[in-house]
Image (cartoon, rainbow over all chains, first blue to last red; front, top):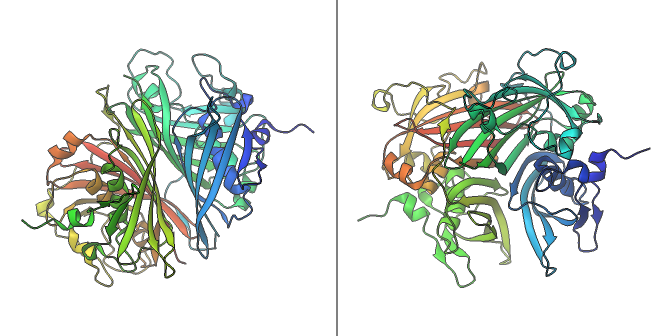
Length: 274
Length: 274
């Protein structure tokens, strides 16, 4: 049985000092480093694999301080505070520089908690959409990068501009998404999928400008059972840009499973040039 | 001249080891600890005051790991990575336990950056609203707490339920807000204002349930000059709940100045009981 590329990317080896050793994945390579979603997933995975973990992920914030180089990295998750039913983690991903000194490239915070049955509601309803199989698979512009082959994306609305003519009018996109090859959903995979929205500024301006995510947050609204029920099905993602100014824009996004259950909300702020 | 209570709460004394010493503010006291917004502001302030700071805040995430006790605390801001135009910070707020051992109660991450003039747009337009002076000042239910006197809130729509009858229907609120007494806006004050939305679940359920913010993120869309132009004027805040499940709900919010400039977007995930 072949390991799924996502599981290979999540393989973290426990070290005697409590950290984990990992290796960047060529399967999820972007232009200058790993796909940001896979870095977020690795940060979360270092908590998921930690022997001291209490409960399931509630919140994840990842700060992309520097691109990771291809090769070995160290993931260090520290349980800063453990309460009765919640736990607060700080995470760093580091790589050694030419002098062998560890340099932090990514910081993250994770909150885990024991989920309990409570009153529940969703004020963010999944939009109506045609079935994914009726929509063509989306293709990204520019240089071909490996990680795009790891996701099946079918645009519902607000897809990439057909003409890059600087005449964009809005920044709202809706799309179906899933791992390629399909893989049963779990928290780390969901964190990676939350970074799948192409940069809002490309749509808003119909112009390809250089971009890089600076910080991303994911709030998890589902438990492990609900993720398991999502199976290998498509998720519906929706994202909209909010403010674009001084070289940074943000977006706010939502992800539902095909049954219409809100699985996560996500936000990110992204650097752009010009 | 009397120091504004907010400035008194932000007073951080540099220590020889690079940390800052602060004291919790009775003026911003909530039921079991400081108002969450003031804690967020203190975390940001420890970066704003740091001699190594590069640029202005872009992103702030605050994780509320434990309530702070009244009294002294230590704020420690570390520049984990400094790039050419961006800088990544980790922050902890700690207090000593009965054995004198520092215990982290709050973790935060901050990204600062040099803002440059670029193409800009706002896809989050300020909603139309009556002038703040035409609206009554909002009053919160329950036990009176000090921090509510530090803010002037005038509800535009989605105010607190007039009847707590369990018949809530939505979670969207729009309100005018400013410091009381009025104070010229800066980044730390904006961070504090971003936590001003009353818990969405109170509106959604028309039921008062115990709540506590677990994690909050603020993205800053304005530079210092735009904050200064906001002066002591009202900000318009808008927030909407998204998912409510298993004891946690999130909201997504936006803050504009009275001139309609988007100053910040904010998100938080909140614990609720039952």
